[in-house]
Length: 387
Image (tube, rainbow, N blue to C red; front, side, top):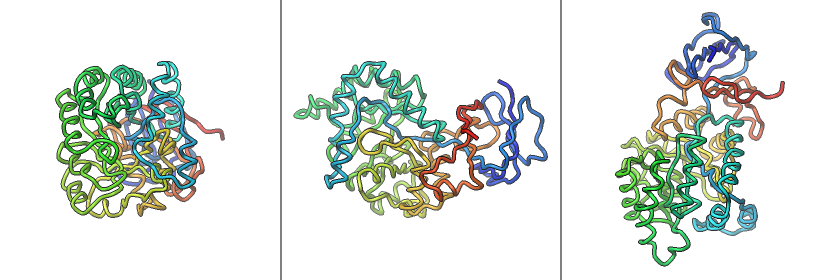
């Protein structure tokens, strides 16, 4: 791969110790960042691109996305907008559609959604299973997901499968037994939905414990619908992230602050369900590491746009624009236990966004406007907007 010099950068937000640099340049080589500094001091490279004063930021890291599904649930969204409440059990219609879909149907839908993610600036993303809820359907979901990202998450414990409505203990046995053995080879992570209508604390401990024993790293859907034990169990089990974190008490925030578990906030879900937003300010002031992610799924957050989530976080979750950008880059990397993404530093992956704006604040200042001019992923130009 040829080396590439990106110069003419009006503002470079490194999201690292270098902070913000003006009149900057970056050299990419072999899929990694090879040099960062003042444009006047830039070394030679095989290719040279002038971005004409635009802003450059790291690619977004979307650490929570449910892209492996079939069908859609717009009627459910319309019902919620008419006053019906959201509950965890709504996924069953997606389970039915996903089970009926062919491998190629699922692959095509994931390709469409990942293309949307990348075009809106997410250069790293996670994909969860969780809409098959049989051994075969969870295994094929993760096998296909692995074609698109190494960040694959086994979420057989999304909700209890319909066949086990009267035997949740039997379903936990399946999730920790045959299903886990089939899915572990295609997974990096194990996740559990700990909330009303899903799984309780003891079930979460059993499922995460089995996943850890199978070589998977834990994460938890925690405290989305009501206050519960999810955050505490996530910290107890050493989870990389506790995701949603909508309903927290002081003990939850203290537990997160005293751990390396990231609080991943998913404002698209609150937007789509008309639920209270997480209080990001409270978490940040306590010293908790916060990530932003899309939670892209057909039922409660059907968006692939990290800029949209940044705008909501600033407007409704009491984050500053700078904090929201950090959460969407460095925070997401921390939630995936990655140090090679989310920053523009020598040795990091060459994942860059060129924004058609003078400052990253425009991501929140101009909500709904596509400001992504270029997307560079592992040193390759994967999107260039029309001039």
